[in-house]
Length: 239
Image (cartoon, rainbow, N blue to C red; front, side, top):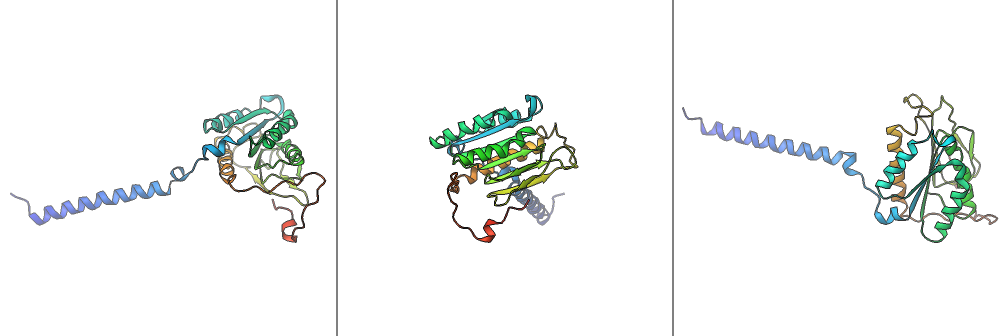
């Protein structure tokens, strides 16, 4: 018995519609996927960037920074991983490279005592006339006040652990974000090794490098008067 011609044509059309529907669904999934939409920093931007990663005490509790450094190097981003006691000499090294034109974007990351040392390193760089694009602290272990700023400072800490929020001093320039990750299962020793934390750190670094194409506000030299600012601009950054 031969099939009805209309029934065969209708089934064929229905099958075609299903194929088109599946294709549109797949396209929509690709379009909204954050992985597909993510843009990587350009080679020119990464070539003039340097990320300094400061380990904590004894150099044995912050090895997650080595993993972050390796991932950044895989993206072509130059890194230095060192113990926090080296922060002053690293600041001198970064300032020399910046003034020679080899560096344009300086990013700092620290864990534990390495995070505690970040404000001191930023202050020294600012005193040398060198801007810091981004600083990320992971569970700074002492009460820390940020008196001079990076363009953005992110302090990721465990509120019910040894970590402390970073306080903004009056007149702080730059944006300060305190991010409390209590209840997420990370601890002081594991925060730098946590996959989600590492992904966030790398994403923030990539975003900062992308922003580095925009002009950076000059850093006031020590002893020079700053131009007058409005009351709104002079207000301390909120945590």
